[in-house]
Every structure is written in structure tokens, then in C-alpha cells.
Amino acid sequence: MFSQDWIEPLIKMAVVIGAIQGAVAYLVLAERRAAAFFQDRVGPNRVGPFGLLQPIADGLKFILKEELIPSGAHKPIFLLAPVMILASATLAFATVPVGYYFPAILGLKAPIAMTIAPGMDIGLLFVLAVSSLGVYGVILGGWASNSKYSFLGGLRSSAQLVSYELPLGLSLIGAILLSGSLRMETIMDAQAESGWWWVMLQPLGFAVFLISGFAEAARLPFDLPECEQELVAGYHTEYTAMKFGMFAMAEYMHMITVAFMAVIIYFGGWHLWYIAPAIPANEVGLIGALLRIGILQAKVLVLVFFFMWVRWSFPRFRYDQLMAIGWKIMIPLGLVNLLASAVSQEFLAKDAYLAKAVVSWLVLGACFVYGMLNVNPQGAPSQHALAKV
Amino acid sequence: MTSPAFPVFLFVVISTVMAASILMIAQLVGPKRRRTDVKGMPYESGMNPLHDARQRFNIGFYLLAIEFLVFDVEILILLPWAVAAGGKQTGTLGAGHGVFWVVMVFLVILTVGFAYTWRKGVFKWK
Image 1 (spheres, chains in turn green, orange):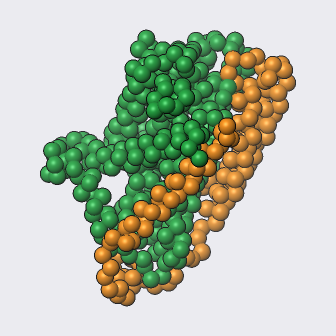
Image 2 (cartoon, helix red, strand yellow):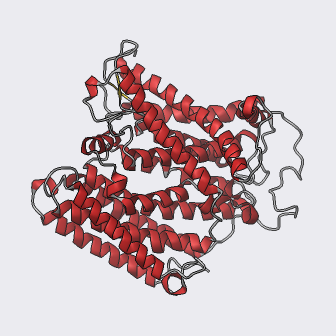
Image 3 (cartoon, chains in turn green, blue):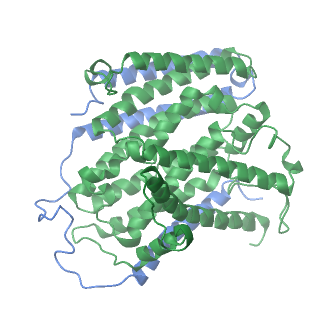
């Protein structure tokens, strides 16, 4: 019972759950402050210094409000939906590494992997599979509420999440081809050893991944599930108090998951030239380990800030535009990227990273030129490209 | 040594218990007030709801779900090949270009199916 097989994952789980819930609470505050900054307002700054106690006040409010279940709702499913969406959002972190290795502490055998389940070879696939379980929470919540807004929101957002999962998976295949593994630690190691971040070798794949990631996390240009003007609050219209809070938490967790995936797969994870180079796992000291954790988290925070920045920079898409972008632009682009990376992986020398980079940037340029020629000056997808077919 | 998937099963249990306990704590702590008919009514911008919300919906969603299933399985089939052909080794499992051409044929079939559903208007929204 008290062997390292039990103790080590339990400690990691406690740290990960605590860190993520804390991060979610403070990201809500950070998002509100960032929104205020972009809109030239002050933002929440009353509760504590710089509003730092605001998340605690918000959490208390969530708990102390009345739990309401609409009379027409299907009660078990209504209660199951937020549990399902929050549990699956948390579970996605089981195979996400948060750093490199750690030297021996607390009498544990070193080197300690910074992942809850370090032995899982299918890490990336597991993250994709589990985070897509969130669709069940959305559709069940929308159906069980017996409200028209919830029902329509649930339908819309499940169709959106399902559609953008395909380009997400397609775009990752290019990066998997470069790394030769689905294990997220190995993907980071491959980038550190080669000194190239996959974003330089997979610019088109990264673009498709990022846009699909925005849609999967239901962030603003793609926040059709809950566009206030049309659907009130979408699938969680009827949810009050902590049940709404759980949906909100899961939403922010999805954003953190996408940011982690982008950093690990495309931005080299803990790798930074000269400062944190590739070293064997058992030679990493305490400072090196902490440095690598810090670098990874810093990259994730930069990406999360980018998410917030985009939120206040782009208007929302119409629903038919959203579907057209997903199926008629993102999936063909994903296929083009897959084809280009398969050919360059097969016929170029395996460590000819410069040649691979040239090929992929040329492909990106060709796609960009083709897209520019088929988009009208108003910025809307042209009749020829999308609407007729 | 236990299986590498053991921490995952542990985490499945723990994350579910965590989510369920958050729900339960809120149910226990939150105030309990009298239910009224109006309070239990689903929100419909102040109107009395007319019909049941679970009505028939656009067939497009169903077609999209079918298309997703087919496409997702096809992507899933590409993943083992990507792992086998990827990294620093030469060719797929060091076996020359044979597997590569098989995958290319597979991709062509996938693209033809995709183009067919596109032409059929599955992705068209009115």
C-alpha cells in the first residue's frame, strides 16, 4: 500500500489538481484584468490588493448560492453533466508532463518523472481521447435541462467540438512523424536533442492546431456554444451556483490543456537554447529541474495570455462560417500538411531539419497565396470557395 | 512494479470523486429555499415555455456526426503508422518505401470519401 507505486502518483495528483484549480481561479481574475486592460477599464481591483482575493470571493459566492434544478429537467443526467465535464477536463492532465525530471526528494527513487503516469506510451492520444469526453458533458447538460436555449446550445456546441477534433488530430500527425512517438516526454526530448522546435518545421500544422484548439476550448472567435446574444448562455443556461462554476472551471481547464499541448508539441516544452539544453535524465540537478519546470510554465502562460488577447481582438463567427472553416478549410489544410510532412519524412534524410523546414514553409506559403486569391476583400470566405458547394 | 496505466486508473477515480464532492459540498452548504412553479420553469426570455424543448432537430447534425465517426476512425488508423514511420529511423520500421505508398493510397481513398460528402452538401448550413 505504501510503496512508491502508490505514494508517487498520489503526491503528483494532489499537486496537479491543486495547482490547476488554483490556476483556474486566478486565470478568471487574470482574464478579467486583461479584458479591462484591452478595453481601457480598471477591472476588478477592490477585493484585496490588486483584486487578488477576488477568486476566493467568487468561489464563496458559487458555494453559497441556491442550487436550482428546473422542474422539467432529467435530474440524474442534469447532475451528471457537470461532474463528467470537470472530471474529464482534470483527467486529461494524467499524461501531460509539467517539467523534465526531478532529483530524489522525500526518499523517492530518482529521477522522478514530472507526469502522473510517466509510463504511458500513448500519452498524446490519451489527452485527445479524454478531453473529447467533455462533449458528453455538453450534450447531456443541454439535453437534460429541458430548456430550448440549452438544447440548441448543446447541439451546436457538440457539433462544433466534434468537427474541430478532426483537424486537431490531423495536424498533430505531422508532429508525431517528426518525433516518432506519442509519448509527450519523448516529443519534448526529440525537440531538445535536435535543437529545433516543431513549430519551425510544422508551421501549417501549428496554425491548424491552434485554430482548432481555440474551437475545442470554445474561446471567443469560436464561442458559439454560449454566444450570449443568440442563446443566452448555451448549454449551461439552466445551471446555477456551483454547477455553473464547474462548467466554467472545465472551460478554463480546456484552455490550459490546449496551451500545454501547444507548448509541449510545438514549442519544445522545457527546452530553451543554451539555458535549458538536453541532458540525460539522471544528471539533472535541483536547479536544472526547477528551471525546466519554470520555462515550461512560462511558455504556457504566454500562450494563455495570447488566448485572452485573441478573445478581445476578433469578432465571433456565424455558425455556418464556423462549420465552413472547420470542414472546408481546416480539414483540407490538415490533409495538405499531413501529405507534405509524410513526403518530407520519407524521402529526406531523417535529421535534415533545415530541408524539412524549407519544405513546410513553402507549403504554408502556397496555401496562404491560394487562400488570399480565394478570399474577397471584405474578409468573408468567397462565394466560389465555400458557399456554392 | 505495477502497470504503467495504474496511475491513470487511480486518477480516473480521484478526479471523478473530486468533481462529485464539489457538487455535493455545494448541495450541502447552499441555502435551501421554497420551490415555486415559476422558479422551476426553464428560462425562455420571460415567456411561459410552449412545448417540450426536446424536439426534432436539423438532420445536418446527424450527418455531421456520421461523417465525424468515419473520419475519426481513419485518423486513428494513421496514428500507428506515424509512430512507426516517424523519428530518426529510415522508412517505416526500416522496411523501405512500401508502407509509405500503402498509406498514400489510404489517404487518397480518405480524400475521395471526403470530397464525396462535400459534394453531397453535408457541410452546407442554411
